[in-house]
Length: 123
Image: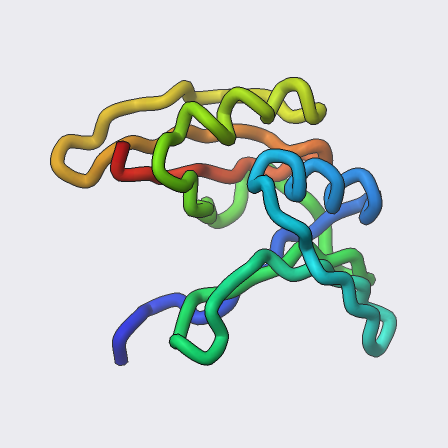
């Protein structure tokens, strides 16, 4: 096994609002899909190269929370870039950019739906 994680889903209440939020902070278009009563939009990832992927999801039984597992999204080359967009896009930074030694930097935020999510970058 190369990676412990192979997929994640972030629950949302307002699909359009959450999609716009994540597209803004990640500076990427998310591809929507609806199947079996589940509405999703996918974060970019390299499927053929074995990349780790995930999506936002609106479906019965999916409830946003700030108390569940903490998912770290790729903050790119410099965490300051996505962090500068979070509050303008309707989220809230709950832990600013914090050094974690040789592993780079991390930050925590709540999204427009109330989920607590994190960012990680090397710079």
